[in-house]
Length: 357
Image (cartoon, rainbow, N blue to C red; front, side, top):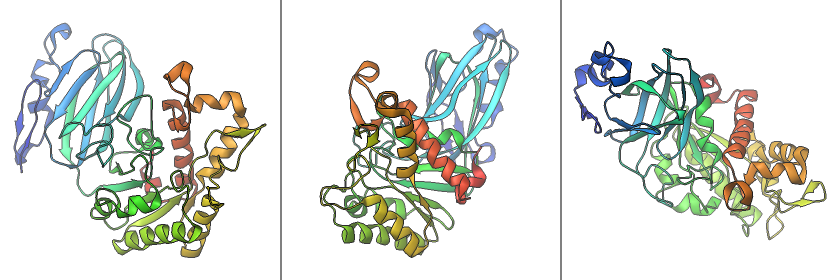
């Protein structure tokens, strides 16, 4: 097997030395003057620094070294705005290395191509006040645990800011050896996700033994009956189990609709035909002995604790984001809601828990 790295240096790698630092990242320039040191192979630009590697879809172990001659502030994003490394400060002359396992898909964002399909291969972007990167290593991952996400626009890899799904933010907490494969897609209900060949069937075809599959629906099941909702969830559960995967139900995060200081039934996902969707999901979980992350209850507690005014920062605001939207999250909100998911994964010791930082 060989991999081709495209970009600044266009390096080509053989099976005997896949993406070794000596070959790929210009370590021969390490003794040169810092001001003229070349970027790693495949990288170009200054702020941001963009790197592209022509690899096939799959999972890759990525190690980066950030820092350099001057003080730096660097954050690392991959593919369709998946945050891997939050803003990290390095002192002048200091270098710090970080490792991740990254899932590469095509299209790289939403599976149906909403918002754009991105570029084939692996894209890495180093942003921040003064981003610095001195080395990048990319190797095929060996049998990683892959956590699959099935859901809607509140979960998905949103290609364009300010919209941000919680699935794009939990990646910072995942250690190498596990990756997040986000198959969530905007506008999907439990039924549409199940039937679209680019969504649940595509996800299911890749599930291996012990891979967790996190299933969150409700926002777009506005007219779905209780029996249909339960049947859709049960079908996903049985099919994931048939592959040896571990289904995990995630009740939908609340919308920001208040009546006084309390959220309305609509905010809590009682749908247009009177079905309490989170309650149905909890019942399916109990009946089929499937773990349930009660993101509805956890997000209700968070949003109501902040109140009608302060909770606005979790969602999209005209003053900060150019749009007011009480369903979709700001980057800050996606980080907070994703944190609630991570909290539950740890509390319940779900398969991904052993790989969390």
